Image (cartoon, rainbow, N blue to C red; front, side, top):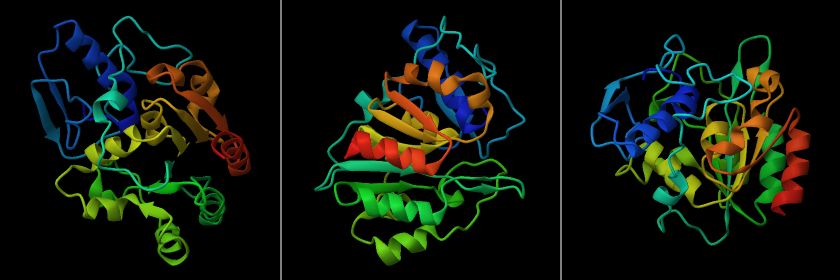
Length: 255
């Protein structure tokens, strides 16, 4: 699998887990830092150094933008149960805020800094917020650029005690891979705010409630958020086309 992260999560990992449960998995060949996704596999090879949107997986749900999943050979790994731990806990309960930011000159995709400031201000009173926008040096990425938006400076300047930048946390936990650490953090909470894309899928594997910011994308066109994102773990899924809608829903659910 040298495919995009979202494709790997939807099509590959549940297919591999189904094969493993049915004693049919001979091995997995995937990208760097994916051993945690296939923790159950005896033979796992991290072969590829980067991902490619051009490569689609050879699996039953290879095309992921669909109205319904083919569930015949598909079972999501129980990541929350496996990665639950006592290492990533803080004095307050955890709220994970996942962000990405892409500016292709047409539409900006992601939560902008002013909106992040509102989210941090509202929820940091009750929660330790883990802010999850990985730096490219920490993950196996595709060719998508990474746009500086001032979010990390915002945390250092205004929320140094209430918001944890996952990249700085990783510098303190280099005995783990980034994805392993990320999954251990996600396993220790039931509250997620995420953006359309890979992390909105990943958070949906960890039960609890995932509130997704998505104002465009094929997921909306085929209704995947409403129809089957809950099948990854039984998580409660909702999505909103505005950050205001996300904040309103999170305030009702998390405060």
